[in-house]
Image (cartoon, rainbow, N blue to C red):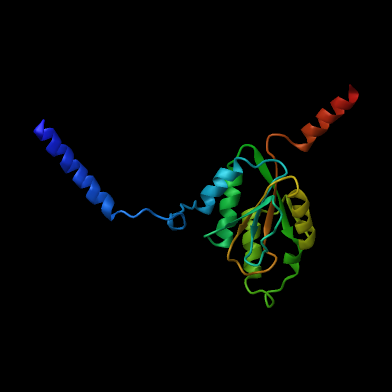
Length: 191
């Protein structure tokens, strides 16, 4: 019995000494574990679907105030971010992108924005030429604002400093297309 009491006292003494040096952290001192932007994108893309958007933007792109718009900051370069986003979308079975670019990108000269020529070439290699629509920048912003009233928009901001280089992916259903939709609607009208 005496041994048990001594053992108990030793344990209490050790615990007491250990706790004596430990200071509880205040809430503002707690470490926040932040997910990498790609991990967060991987999680979010599973929730996104038809009519949602994913946008890869340059550094001057504004932080929009619409509640449906979420912004992430990429730690990779603009082109690397674009490739990652495209690969993540391509790996999904439920979505496919409709790609929009700023129409202004075709009218910017190298002397106004050094690097724009190489970027356009890289963009063509990454995205290809088909299924890419070019729209005036303000019109795309209006499309995003309207979409964000009902649907989620995920904006991924990079440190790129060439204007009109944003890439807008409007998500569409991968396993259902407009022809199938038309056939179904025609069938519905016949009944």
